[in-house]
Length: 270
Image 1: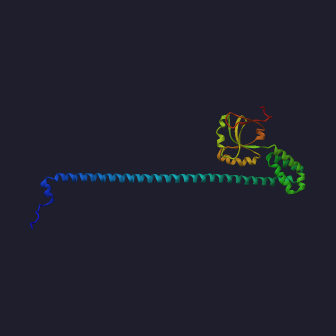
Image 2 (image 1 turned 180 degrees about the vertical axis):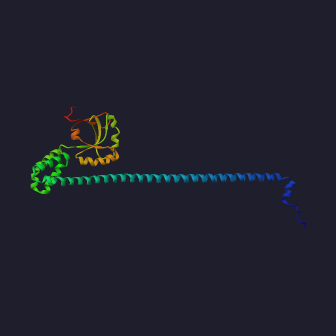
Image 3 (image 1 turned 45 degrees about the horizontal axis):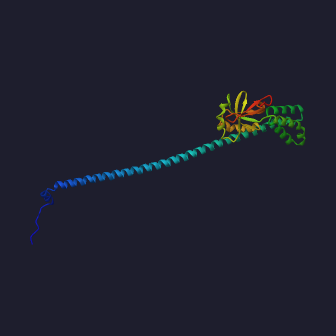
């Protein structure tokens, strides 16, 4: 049996038939396609990675925004709570100071009121009516009640007089601003909307006076002035309407809440 012919290395056949250029061209084409495929796969992977990174960054940003909003809400809640606590503390301090003042008045004038000396009683009552017109009745009544029915009977004329003076005092308002023109008061209604107190505008001393109230007593007005000073006007002050605006007529205006026109001498004509 004859041996198969030895045709030599495989590439000699390519050389013999002139196929080398074709093979090289095919190899080059394959390599080029492979490179393009690698480029495509790489670009796709990069794009996907970027998309994933972008989405992840967006999610992180969203979480950070939510965390920031939650933090801001907590800060605002804490701020409001702190301010409310400060207002309550200020009002508690005011109440304590008022009680101490009342106790001091009782200690100062009780001996004269109970002395039985008409002159001493008259002087003590006069000082109380001038200095504490709203408190005088309660002070005299407290002193008389503590001493007994006889003292109550003896001081009844003074109690009745103090009651008349008290009725002629007030109501009180807490003044927020004074403006020369009515239209200048337009910003205050919205600023006062957060308060539970009513407010009104009065013409006092040639000005349009925006005020919170009225309040039946000076003590109530003083307590109300604490938050008003904190939130609206640091220069808020009190006015006794019985002195500054005893007679008043309400005037409706085309815009705004309208105002009370005040008079010291008697009712105003419409």
